[in-house]
Image 1: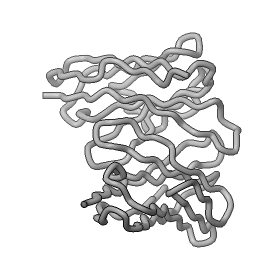
Image 2 (image 1 turned 30 degrees about the vertical axis):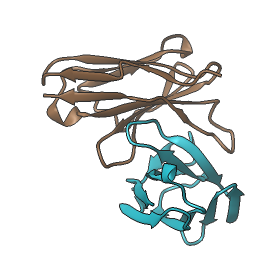
Image 3 (image 1 turned 135 degrees about the vertical axis):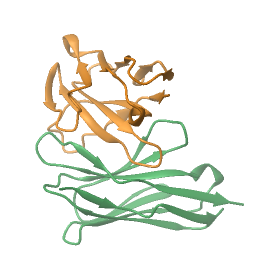
Length: 110
Length: 116
């Protein structure tokens, strides 16, 4: 079976840094994606990791450790517009099916 | 570049009725996906097409759900008959093709279905 765990909800203050963790146990691994989803909207692509290490893209960074089955998304200089759900998804080998976690709802307060 | 288009945005039906959703993927994208997203959960893949062939429908409740992708472009997802537990957002996504190392899926805005 496939199992992807992430915290249900997190809160943070504008301007702060927040780290959203994701652990996974899957049969096959072809990369890990992070998506952002604002309420009532489509998920949008944030980052992709397939090798161990840190990928940085502006205020957002994502880390992967394949041996530990662990990833995190780091958001710096938080803004109110970052209030959204953050979805961790593992791409499986074969036809690269995406298996999503339940998502972490991030609330950014002033 | 136009994104993934879906219609309708909202649909309310009574249980045991039928409903259909339509999706137009990004032009040139070979792979199309239908997901079900229940409130408070992540999207769950229902079916994946590569061009007009099905490559994964392992989580599609085939007794009531059906999907087709004629000519490898547009796709429709149908539910017949609907049950209360089918209330969810149905998301369509597309990607250039499988086999790419970074196979990014682009999502449409979804159809929110309420079954009463």
